[in-house]
Structures are given as structure tokens and as C-alpha cells.
Length: 225
Image (cartoon, rainbow, N blue to C red; front, side, top):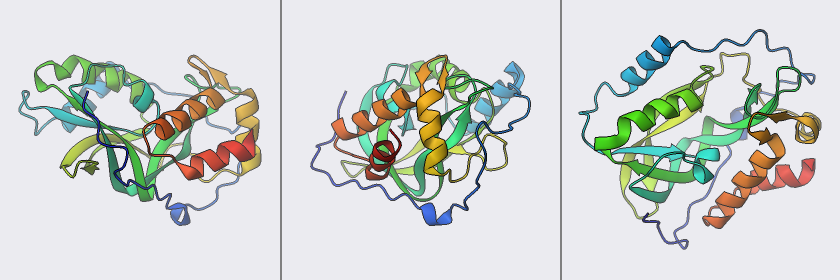
């Protein structure tokens, strides 16, 4: 996989001034979980790919676990940045990193600021089954809004990249949580794929190893562990 030089400056901006504090007790009252049907998932993916010719390569922007676990073969991986969105722990997780009784937290893109990550190029000829698997992984609960975002690669190229943006109109949107709740989640939340703390720690380590440390996420981890 090709990767841009670690000397290329890419800086996160968290844009937190755009987030209204939404204090909530823990565990939050999230209501009954609803999984999207196979038909809804297929329709969502088809909508995102309506302008794709079925052969051209596609780009995917990873800002959380996709950085260290893309779960699919990629033709190229490059450090990248998107503007207008920032990374944060804005999504309650009732399966992967927590349970309905003790929800965990996972990262999402929310509006404002900028976000660094890894852009993955998917070979168009073999992309479809991997995109279907990606939809099952990321879109099962319908908490994200998939979007094509302008993405600046570290080598100067500009490409449209598929990214998963947080929906603010769902119960699983956390808003800006106080450190006390994040600390509680780090101490107790565990789901199908492990703990929230492990998820955040691995993402912090992967970003630092890629030459794109997220200072805000590192500071949160330091305060809450």
C-alpha cells in the first residue's frame, strides 16, 4: 500500500464550539434498538452508488477503527484530511463496544472543524462485496449518514471519499458528554468486540503511528483513564 510521507502537515480541528452540551445520566435511556432490514441496507448503499459506473476505483475515509481494521483489501492507503467535520465520541454503542444496559461509545464525524484519517482506495472491479460488508458493519443501526466528502490526500490529490457522518436526529447521538460520563464508560463498557477504552486507545495509537496524532482525543484519554 502506498502511504504519504509522515512529514506532510495534517492537523485536526475539533470544531467543538458547534456542539451544544447535552448532559445525560449514565446509562442513557436510548429506547428499543432497531436494525435496518436487508432491503433498507441495500437501498441505502444503492443510493450512495447511484453515480458510480461499477468499474472505477472508489475512496473510503477512515477516521476510527477503519484506520487499524479496514476489514477489506485496499489498493492504496494515504493519510488524508476532510474539512467541515471533526472526530469525537458521539455515538452510543449497544452491541460492538457496550450493551443495552451499559452502552459504550464509538467515534463519529460531527459538523465543524476538520479531521485527519486514512483514505483507502478500493479497486472498482472487486469493491461491491466489500462495500456490502462495510454497510453491515457501519450502517446496521442507521446512526450514520453516509456521505461523499471532499478529501485532501497528503500527497496533494483531492478525491471524493465515502465517510460515515453522525446523525443528530437519533437517540444514540450523545452530544458533548462530560468527562465524568466518559470516565464511567471507559471503566465498564464492553461489547461484542471489546471495551470502549481499548477501541479509543487503539485509534489513538494508530493515528500517532501514522503521523497524525489527535491531541484532543489523547487529552480525553489521559483525563478519563
